[in-house]
Length: 267
Image (cartoon, rainbow, N blue to C red; front, side):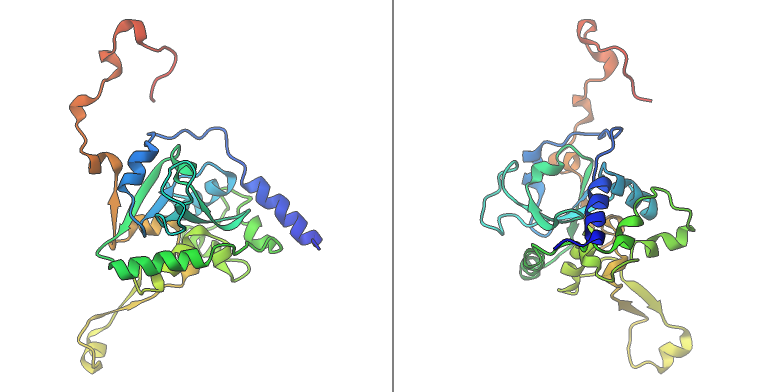
């Protein structure tokens, strides 16, 4: 039976998921070209166009508001861009789901590829994400939802990341990047680990030869932009990977007069 809190939470989730009308992507990437570049285990970052996306972009000071994991044909339904579920994501309304790549071909995106991840660990990362399919977001926890109602909350910059971790204490159900962070942490692959630098006295007394100790940051503190910033992930841009030739571009002033458009120009 639905409780009043869950009902209100469901309404809030639908409100926050509504798209904003002013979003326009800079480039349109062909879905088939994008699929050819993606490998299982790749993280596909998305610049979302919803109310919750605006809040996440502000809180993280980043272009990227959403992260998905490409799983290839792990579900055995093929690699069709339009129909096959090849991406796993955590959605505020539907929980952890698998969706086709076509869902994001009209958005600004970025591919982040884990460097030198072994085939065995790549498969484990995919399996971890697949095993979480069906987990639901706890719509009774209004704190998790209410933090996104204000696109630009008046909090200091150093507190914004922490604000994303407030709520139920079950961040896998709250933010897309936490699910993916857990998947990589399950094979001890780094994203942005905390680095503890030992002072000289500690180095002399330590039995370890290393001067830095890597700590696994809690997954609730990861955001989509961390995969972009991480030195352990390679950024793949489709035009670069496919061989870009600037000489093939046709600029506005080079087009025939009869097909020139009027009224719109880049600022």
